[in-house]
Image 1 (cartoon, rainbow, N blue to C red):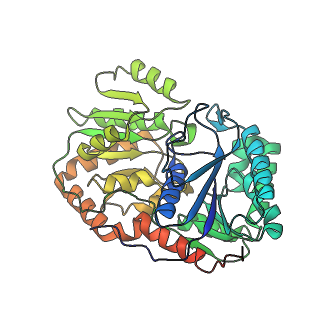
Image 2: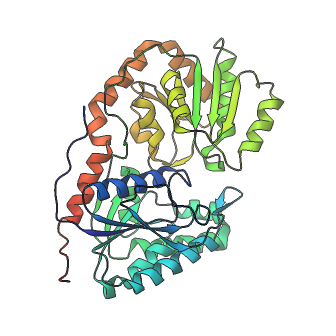
Image 3: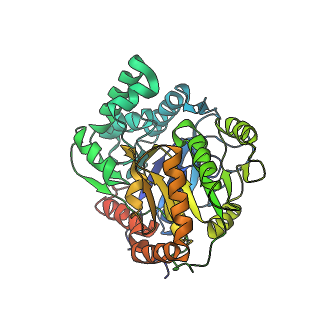
Length: 397
C-alpha cells in the first residue's frame, strides 16, 4: 500500500518551533517535527524550523534543503542526570520571542511543541501582534503529582503552573493519544483538541510473518522513565525458561552505564548486548527478527516503537501505567501484551507467553498492522494538520 496523496492547499508560511532536530537529537517528537517539516516543504509550503543548534559550527543541519533552519539559541547540553535542564528552555524561549518579534508578519502559522513551554509562552505572547495562527502539539500532559515527583515540592508546583498557563493560551491543539487529549481538556483547554493517531513514516506494506529468533529488543533513550533495568530483570527471568534467549538494548543516556554494570554483575554478557546509539538500519534488522519488542517505560506520550515493531510483524510488550499512552497501541494478545504489574516476574511471564505463541502472534500482529496502518500513518496526521492550515488566509503583501 502506497502513502496517500495529501490534499492540495495554497502555500502557507509555517514556522515549526522545537528545540531539538532529528537526527542530531533522537526521540519521538524529534522524528515528528522532522517528518512534518520535510513533508510540508515537499507539498510546496514555505517552512522554517526554529531550534537550538545541535551541530558543529560551520556544518549544515541534516534535513531537506527546502526547509530553512534558523537557530534561536546556541548549542547547549539539554539534560543532566537524565532530566531536562532549566537554562536551555529559558534561552530557547527568549530566542523564539526575539525571532517572532523581529519577523512579525512573516508567518501564517506558528506550529510549536508544548514542551519545553517557554517557547510556547513566547509565541502566545506575541501572537496578537503578529497575526499568525498558533498551533500546539501536546505530546504529553503531566499530572500535578508527576510534576511534584519530577521536580520536588517547589519546582514541581512552578512547573505545573507554567503548564497550566500554556494549556489556557488560545491555540489549535493536537494530541497524539486519547490519554493526553483527555488530560488537556481536563486542565482547562479553551477549545477543542484533535487527536493525531499517525506518526509512522515507514513502509505501509503488510509485513511477512516469518518465524522469529529468540531475541528481545529494547530501543529507547536510557533515562529513568524508560526503566531499562526493569526490562533487563524481566529478560533475565525469561532467559531461565527460554533456551537460547538473547536481548539487545539499543539506546544511550544516563542509565546505560548502570545497565552495563548490571549485565556484568548478573553474568549476562554472553546473552545481552547494549551497543548504545546505533544506525537505524541495525535497529530495523533486529526488530525484523525479534521475538518481541520490550518497552517497560512508565511514561510515553505515544509509543512509536510499538508501531515500528508491528510494521515488522513483531509483537510488543508494554507495561500499564497512568502515564503510559503506548498501551493504546497494543491490543492485548493480538499485536503484543500489556503487562499489568511493573515487576520483573510479570514481564518475564509475558516474554515466555509470546515465545510460546510461536508464529501465531506474529501473524496476528501483521494483520493488526494491515488493519490499522492507514490511521497510524504520518499521512493521516498530516492531512489533519493541513486541514487546520486550510482556513489560514495569507495577508496581502
